[in-house]
Length: 97
Image (cartoon, rainbow, N blue to C red; front, side, top):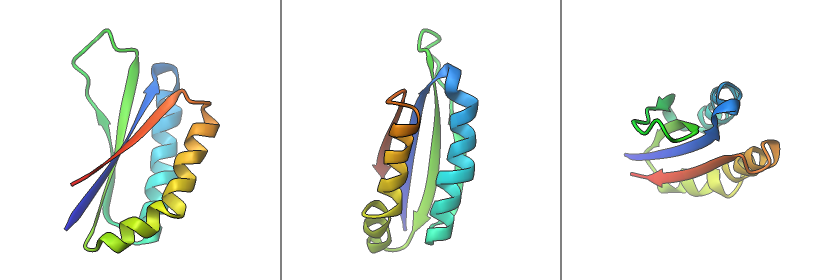
């Protein structure tokens, strides 16, 4: 089983909008693409000086081919959409587990 975790670090002023986009756009697209156990959660920061909020979209699959297909199509398009929509004020990064 493979877990893909994409975190979106956003300026605090964008937090609610980014959380909604993560749920309604990114997570829904991942589920429709074939990933399982897709969830969105807020990352808790213990550093009060950080002026950002982060949300993670976690998804699972049994085969790395699905991951490659995702990031060669829909996933990459959505990450580009994120960058364009918020003009670089949201930083997405992905971790594979």
